[in-house]
Structures are given as structure tokens and as C-alpha cells.
Amino acid sequence: MLRGWVGSSLQAHSFEYVRPATVAQTVQILGEKGGRAKVLAGGQSLIPVLKLRLANPQVLVDISRLPGLAFIQERGGRLRIGALSRHRDFEESKLVRDKYPILADVAASLGDPQVRNLGTIGGALAHADPASDWGTALLVFETELIAKGPKGTRTIPIDGFFKDPFTTALRPSELLTEILLPKSEPGNGGAYLKLKRKTGDFATVGVAVQIGLDPKRNVTRIRLALAAAGPTPMRAVKAEQALVGKRAGPTAFAEAARIAAEEGKPEADLRGSTEYKRAMIEVFTRRALETAAGRTGR
Picture 1 (cartoon, helix red, strand yellow):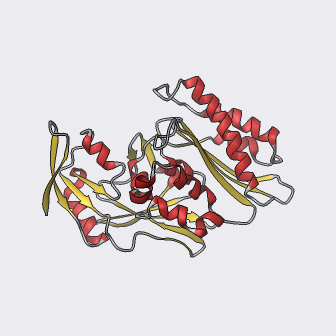
Picture 2: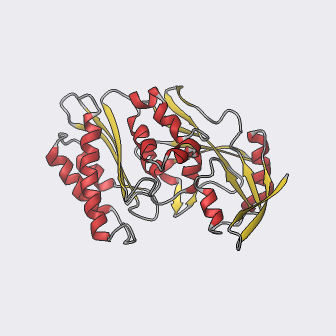
Picture 3: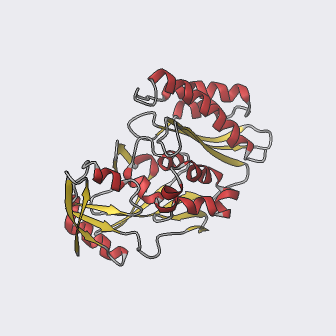
């Protein structure tokens, strides 16, 4: 066990630093320390928070070298993703590019090369930023999150994972270990698009779409989610309902985009006014629907 500190020369925060060798050791430490511990994976979300003193953990638990938590594979009828899979892994995965292009979209949209090389999908999900690109994209699947704690393993549906800004359903004693997605099916396509002011910035707005079309291009399945449009990543359920059974095309997509913009609840900030963000939700929803439909092969 080591001592460490993070902060400016005027505001340094000290903490204990531990690097467990296994998931079991990690869970034991989290169980003992409870809410006094923070988990460090790639550090791209946590380190800035520590520097700003927005979090003051007594213990920093470094899981970056835990074995067996970095993988992207189809197995058992699902896409299985280890929580320590780094953003660059999704860019480089042929499986992802060919069958789950929305995940490659997300990875390519994130930060800069350093962020993509170091940051992990599990860390991004646990951070739960309202503008979370990963959180938004995973909402368009029936995603399940696997958490391990002192009492065993728990499965958390993605629809119940994000509770409030920077707050999830994970308990202080639990570690997110795996993400499960349904296996890609023929006639399905997805896309993630976001507006940002500059490279490395958070989304001004982000839109994720996963759509299923029958051979006549009628919408059989649709999930649509928004980033930076509320206190957590959110689904645009009314827009989804407006598309089911409709023929995919400009008219249906324009109407769904209009409804999605009404569903979003973006707040004015340095990235734009509420009115501007709603307008951009409409534009990017229409574009994401067109891109996703184009990837169905129908």
C-alpha cells in the first residue's frame, strides 16, 4: 500500500493507493472501504475530477492491470465486452466495425489519441456523465451490466443503470466487470453522431440509433437515445414509438427527429442555448437515423 496525492501545488489531496491483483481482491477492498474508495481504470474521467477536488477518496484502487477484463467477443449468443476494454480496442476490432458499427462510431468520437489509448468503457460508464457517449450508445441495445460485489454477481439492465448526474446503480462495494449486448441480427444497423465544439470536447448533443428493418424497409425495431439532453443519458421513447411500423425514409425520420427534439431537456451552457441544442438534436437525430438505416443492408 502506497501514499499518493493529486492536485495543484496549492490544493493537494492525499490518499492511499492500492493495486489489487485479482477481481476478488478488488471486491474485498471495496467492501471494506465502502464509499471511501474510488476505482481507477484508465484515469481519463477520474483524474480530472480528483484534480478539481470534486472527489476526495481516502483510497484509490487501481484496477488498470487486472487480468481478464479486456476483451470484445461474441459468445453465447451475445457480444461480451470486458470493462477494461479501451476505446481504441473498439476502433481496431474487425468484429465491431463489421457488426456493431455504432460502437466504432463512439470510440472514434472520443477525445484525442491519449484518451482513446488509455480510457476504458467501464470507467466511462461508471463515471455517468450526462453527456456520456458510451452510456448513450448502450441505451439503444438491451444492454446488461455485470457487477461483482461481496455478495456475489449482479446483473443491472442499462435502462436502470443511470440514476442522476454522475450517479449509477452500482453499489460502493461493487465493481463493473462486463457489458453484455444482444448479438447483431440481419437487417439491423446503428449509428452514433455527436456535435462538439472542438476535438476532445464533450458532446453539445449526441444521438444514438439502433434500427431494424424488414425486407420492405418497414421499421420493426428502433431504439433512440440522446446525450447531453438531460441529467442522464436518455431514451427518446416517443420518437421510437412514432417510427415503429413506418417505412424508413425522409418523412418518417424527419417526424421522429422533431419528436426527439421535444423529448430532450438540454440545459443552456457555454456550448449553446436550450433552443440551439434542441435544433441540433433534431438535425443529428435525422442524420443518425439515415446512417443507421443505410447500414442495415436493406
